[in-house]
Each structure stands twice: as C-alpha cells, then as structure tokens.
Length: 490
Image (cartoon, rainbow, N blue to C red; front, side, top):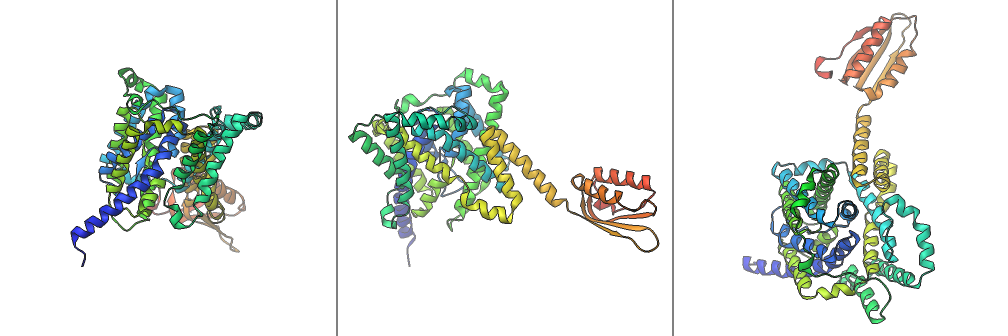
C-alpha cells in the first residue's frame, strides 16, 4: 500500500515536470501576445508571472493555467491605440475589481448560461481578426487597423512583399514557424517532449542570429522598466464612456473565456472540479494586480491548461512553479528576447488564430442545428466588421431572438363542420413572433360563418397576442374560449 508521503512525493515530482512543460509552452505565447497587442514584450511575461504566482495560488480551478491570451489581443491592441498604453493599467485594474465583485456576488456560474454559439462565434471572430492583423506582422509591416481595413490592404501587402527581399525573408521565417508547429503534432509522442511553439520560435531565432537575417526583432526594455503603474490622471479617464465600455468588454470576454476554459479543463481530468465563483475571483485578483503593474489582462488559457493536464499535473504546484520559471527567465535572460524575430511570433499567433476557428465543428453544426450555426457565423462576421464588444452584443441579441423564435411554437387547428361554427384551436406558445401567422390563418376563414376561437390549449399567451386576438374576435363576433389564468401572460 502506498503511503501518503510517497503519494505526495510522486505528485510533487510530476508537478515539477509539468511546470517545465507549461513554462516552455507559455514563454513564446506570453511574448507573442504582448508584441501583437502593441505593448512591450516584458508586459506579457509579467502577466504570465502573476497568473502563476498569484492566480495559481488561489482557489477555484486547480489545474488550469492563466496568463495573457490570444483571445484578448485584438481588444488590447484597440484599447492601446485609442487610449494609450498608460490607460491600459486602469482598464485592466477596473476589470479585475469588477471580476472580484461578480465572484463575491456568486455570479460566476451565470457565465455558463451564455450561448455556446455566441462563444464560438466570438472566438472565431477573434481568430479572424488576429490572423488578418498578424499577416502584416509576418512581413514586418504594420497592419492598417480594423478587420475590414486589413482585408482591403491584403493585395497591397502581397505586392509589397514580392518587391522586398527583407519582407520575403520575414515571411519565410514566419511561414516556417507555422509549418514546424503544424508538423510537430504529427511526430511520435517521445519527439514531442518539447512544445511545438518553443521549437518553432527557437529554430527561427537561431536562423536569424546565425545568418544575421535582416528582419525585425523583439524590442527589449527590461522587466522593471516595462512596469508602468497607472497615474492619477489615468484614473480620471474613468469618466469617459468609451473607456467604461472597454472595461465592460474586457470583463465579460475575459471572464467568459476563463470559465469556459475551466469547463473544458474539468473534462480532461478526474480531480476536483472548478468552483466558478472562486475562479472568477482568482482571475479578478490577478487582473487587479496586473492593472497595478500596467501589464496585459489575463484569462485562463486552454492551450497551457491542456498542456498542464497532459503532462501529468496533479495539484496547483505545477502552475505556480511555471510562474517561477517565467520570473527567473525574465530576470536572468532578458537579452534572449531581443534575438527573437517578430515574424516568428506572428507565425505562432496565426497558428493560434486558426485554432480558434471552428472549422471541423461548423459542418455538423449546420446540419444538426442550423440556427446555432447562423448565430456563430454572424457573431464572427460582426466582430470582423465592427469591433469585439459590438460583435458580441449582436451575437447575444441574435441568440436571444433565435431562442424566443424556437420556443414560441404554436399549433393552429381549424375544423369546419357541416353545420355550426368554425372551430379554431390554438395550442402551444402564442407570442408576438407568431402573431402574423395566427392572424393570416384567421383572416382566411369564411366571413359568412360564426367562429369559435378556443385558446384553452395555450401554455403561454403574451399581451400583444392576447390583445390582437381579442380585437379580431370583437370585430368578427367570434366566441372565445379563454386559457386558464395561470397560462396567460399580460
């Protein structure tokens, strides 16, 4: 029989190994997300460190790992462009405090009520915008900005690349990075001891240094220098409506992504399951500290979390240690960041963007749940055309309308006996959405015969429908059998 001490040693041993795997997965992603967000690379590492050392210690989910996420890249980049880097700390700090409040009010579980089609549409929209923006970074060029502008600028980008040798070199590096990451997953298990993103970025960095390639590299300022706590004037901008809207968008998207990640991670292991309210508060605590440090916002990241579980992690020690390794790397080897080509990081994020697209799921979803597929596609398209916040709101509104339409089924049965009144029976849910169909059926009834309108079979009758039916009955002198009072809704 295994002793408790032996079990503890075994768990710590596997957690130590898992922490190294997660660190190697997180390192290129932390740097890549920061660069793509338009902020110093060190800020991505700071968020990863806080995600390990702070959020990793707190209760909620024991195995999922937090840090800067590709899913928030577009939102962060837009916020930095509109309000400046100095305002980022205030936005992240306020979002963290809002998450803490929502968790304390035990509202974390309600994030699970968000339609999956909206969430997948949100991720798909993020993936599309991310890919379009990083195509320019792949060639060491600056993206025009919005999703539609990025699309419009693609022909010019292609011509620019073909006429520039340095741009062609950068594209070759980035494309090679994507190819290595794609093929790495197809290698035998033992060959995958090192994470694909690390191997891909490491190879591209080695080639850049050895051959002194003329490509852009990550700009390094130093870990301490990169920390920019928000100033008093930045807090004064909380009165701006646009800034408040951005805070709400950060909070909702970061919280939804974290809690959906928690649900996915729970399916990967047999250990303790996530307490959603505590996990939301843990994310809020991490984001509050990231805001004080002027760093990127954090979410739970499914890529790192899945790597943690698959590496055999059994306790939260693994995710805490991964934060320690990130801190040691940032403190002892900061110069290593300056050798990384930005095109390679663009390749990592393009690969991450494609993984956000529900390519395999969309076909079956269209065949089995066409309405859900429509919501997903429209949400993704709305994010691409407008922005993250408005696109998600459009998706949520469309999901509500779809649900209301699907639940408002009404059955109309018309019986015309040889003598006596025409009998019309309504059953199901009579709402304003089905009112045109109901009135069209009633208007087609013979005008020279009496009508008995039986509403007793209705389980729900809203005010608009009830008023319209009463008005029609009064005009046609129809006899009406009303539903039970408990079934009607005024």
